[in-house]
Image (cartoon, rainbow, N blue to C red):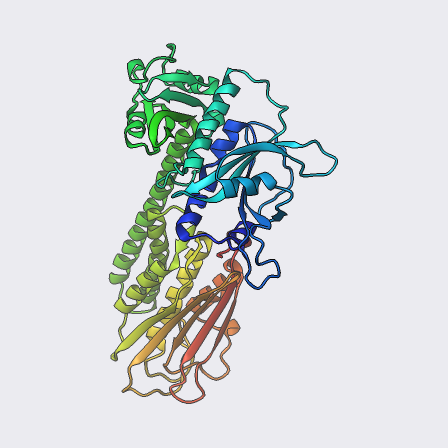
Amino acid sequence: MATPAELAFERVDLSDEQLLHLQGLLGTWGILADLSFSDLVLLAPVRVNPESPNAGVSGSELVVLGQMRPSNSSTVVEQDLVGQLVDQATWPLVMATFNGGTSLRGEIVLDPGQDPLRLHCIPVRLEDQVVAVLTRLSTGIGRRPGHLERTYRDVFNRFAIMVAEGAFPFPTEEMAAEEAPRVGDGVILVDAEGRVRYASPNAVNALHRMGMYSQVEGRRLNDLGIEESAIEWALVSALPVVEEVERRPDVSVVLHCIPLLEDRIVTGCLVLLRDVTDVRRLDRLLLSKDAAIREVHHRVKNNLQTISALLRLQARRLDPGEGRLALFEAERRVRSIAIVHEILSRDPSDQVPFGEIVTALIRMAEDSVVVDRHLELAVEGDLGDVPAEVATPLAVVLAELLQNAIEHAFVAGDGSEGSRMDASTGTGSAEHHGHVRVQLEHNASTLRLAVIDDGRGLPEGFDIEDTASLGLAIVRDLVRSQLEGTIVMSRGSSEPPFGTCVNIEMPIPEVRRIV
């Protein structure tokens, strides 16, 4: 479903370059709202419909493309206007600004019975063409004007000239990131020579955190021992620059340097500062935590591999028989769990790419093939990322089912259920190649895993509830208890080779559901 802003942009007749210019303005104009202590609204004429009865009337309606409220002052427009159509008669100065291309000031009454609002209309120009109008709405009653307020409004007026000249937003300006500094974080205003003309109280606090306590106004930051390469580059290139400065190992400040232009000539620079020391400290803690989690999974993987090796060594010292076979099966199960921890040791997130686990399990199953015919193992579909608590039991289940298909589906037998996991019977052709397919599927709420072979099939009357196989019992209990799913084993065909189909479906935990 389209958002109101998307619907609004569909109603204007603008080129891709003009739309990109307006999107850039909407991505950065939070600075303008804070500097002006005012609400901002962006409007443009609605595209004329040739089939409309009023097709000859140009600009009879306006559409609100965007709306921004200041973070350092109260709002004067409480309702959400984005996407709404407004009549030209309500906003006459907007149409006059759009048609005339010059900034206009006046008043507007948005709600009957309320006091009029001050209106400042600024043409948004791109390549000598007005594409929209930026309106500033204020009551005229607000913060008591002091040095800070006067400086901020003066800077806003300089930005308004840049918008009207088509110099703002900058073509290379990126959308404001979450960590991007706002006006309330701290403002330093420098002139064309890089000398500080004003520093807000919050900016002074940030400089104090960096160890600089001298008077800053009238001096360059370099003279105070603070790196100002970002400011110098913004003044030289006439393009915005974002840089993070580390004054000391424990203090980090982000500088957003925005050049101020007049007639395309740099007249100064607005520097927004944000102290991100605490943010960086948390980042380091998270990195340390992630490293610790990866190390835990790595050690668990190593321990499981050691146990696997010990079981394999012990099995080789036994004579052929059930004891030796049981140790080999235990070793294989431990190895399948180690695969999950190996992947978690590379990425400590709660989600595990199950496709990597499937690839490793297929390789492990291929290495264990002992039948005297060619077997082809194939994978169809993908489960995507699954929760870690699902990946481990599901890996054990898949390993058991693959091993069961390889060991029991393609060997001659009497059709009785084997002493271990099986259960195949019937007669199959000794000439055809064996095939084992793993089908994976997931949607928003469930996971499905199926293992299908074209071997001998299940014996008549087979019931997984009554199986004497340890492997099948493990699969059944893991699916029902830990995965909270269902398992169905059936013949894949009514004629030889019958084949076996094992179908497992399970819900995805609600708190970590894959979307």
